[in-house]
Length: 91
Image (tube, rainbow, N blue to C red; front, side):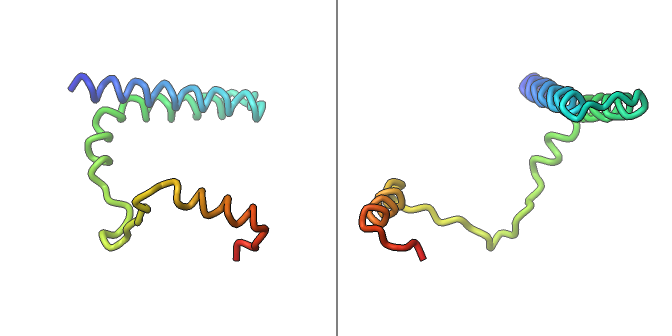
């Protein structure tokens, strides 16, 4: 239970920082808009410990979707470097 609370606290802190920066950057001076934003942050922060275990089990992509990674990760980089040196088009 403690790791979930720590993770929720860090996520809530991050969400609060994003909202604070967003309000500052977009120069939101309307008190109602600020209170709505902070109310949503507070609601999300309070709901986070209960939402994390549930949302963590959601599967957004179908099971048939897969990503194939090369056996040697530098292969693609080496190929791109060779094409750049040979000045061949990428397509």
